[in-house]
Image 1 (cartoon, each protein chain N blue to C red):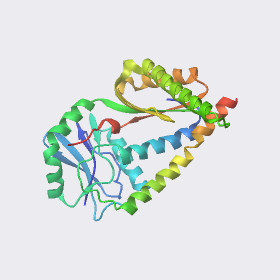
Image 2: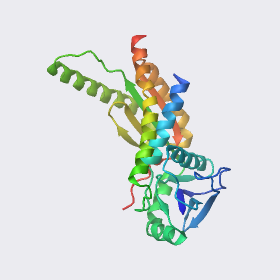
Image 3: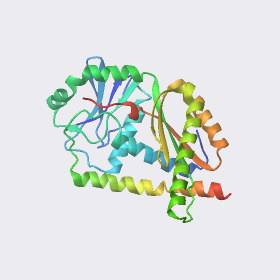
Image 4: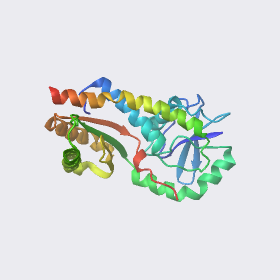
Length: 66
Length: 208
């Protein structure tokens, strides 16, 4: 697998996992038990992860500058 | 409460893991497939930690089953009767999907290209954006031409960053990754990250 930058890779992997778990996968029931506030909590966590994945863009910029 | 992780086929044993709420995992047989669940006293907390734990269970099932159909985090059932009432009408559709996913995993590819940040007048800005969009599409076409022999299906978001999910036979994962490596070396100006293999979340489909 691509391994430019191990720390970057593990952060992106975590974002990719959370994105799949929350947004993909089959939905069997209409009874989603998360309240709106709880869902917001999950998405706050997701935004934090995405913010750390901003290193992806920095890395791209450094590659261009090099 | 019953928390549902995945439907599987050809399960050879449960992973040595507890569930997202610390509960033991359990296999519930259904006609022609198996549901992997956890029984909890109350609903799971809606935290990213619980979501990651859910995902960890689903991923580890890939080492123990011939086919895994991941279930999205967030749904649960009050008891066994509610679980069966919700699942029973969909058993045939779930079995069809598992058959399609036999021996397959999902691989993710993200591509980020640095965009030029210096300000330009409106029309020039729009032209530049259009050129960047066209460049992303060309990159995607090139990636897809290279990996085509290994890809059974794909779900692609050509935005910035580009995100692709590819359904690949387990035996082809290494060849797919080598092809992405080759693509990355040909494009040193782009950050290319290949992740997986994942349970095939992006190919689970919707139940009507």
